[in-house]
Length: 366
Image (cartoon, rainbow, N blue to C red; front, side, top):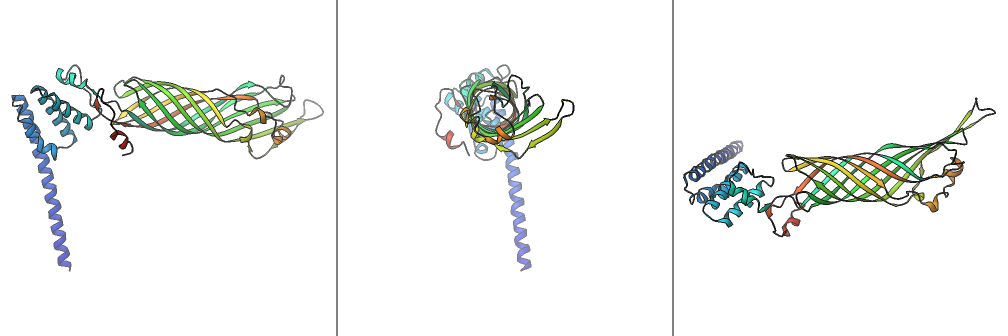
């Protein structure tokens, strides 16, 4: 039994080693084939080149060698006046390297003209992102349990977070439209002085699903692509919680005040908030190419377009009103967000004017 196992293992090792030798020998032969094809091109023996390259194009060239081979075939077909085969070879090259660029100054003029017939900009790109934000409230109208003319209220921004995904459709090399879906946490805080001496502190923690739609303009600079965009976001609020503290100060004179803090667990504010809110968005950022994908860093400003408070329920929460002497101001929220993300282009090299085939959509989630 042991002898049979040793024999089987020996045969397996021989087969593996033979396969390894054949593979490396084939790679070496294909490298020689590529050199031979180039020599024939330089010598003007053009009609032999397709037959020389075919065996290794079918099975043998690595990716880099295939790109070189299709480049050589494209030039060959242009020289022998076979434009259809030249276009086919160049398209195969672009499918291997969608980011392949022709240098208008150093590359042959016939290749430059041919490249102008093709479009390599991804039709769609998918992206994912995450980041942090700072939100502040802008008062539309002041309300309160005291004389609001004498109150000393102030709002300040707090840090939240967001993450999301989306898709962009590239209209051309410069313009695109995008649609996303984000899960966003926003926070802000509020301080006020009531009845001259009492202090009131409030903070709100909101969670929403945001659906931004926008138009983007970009400009490519080597591996960097800076961009700006503007659009509209629909916010769907999922929850809103508030934490309040009221410090009641009382005494016979103004110099020695006794403090009576009133605090408690967070209060659900969902019923006194608008479920659906709207914002205008403006952003700028830049992407950076890593092989055939991109990473990006951007800053986005969201300007709230509506009052987040449900005015019909503004005085409906007895705990807020009688325990904390708190009445919501009419207000909107403005947010500055910083996002870092990853972009996956869905490349589809094609001739300019060629209709998008259904195969693109079949390969979106390939």
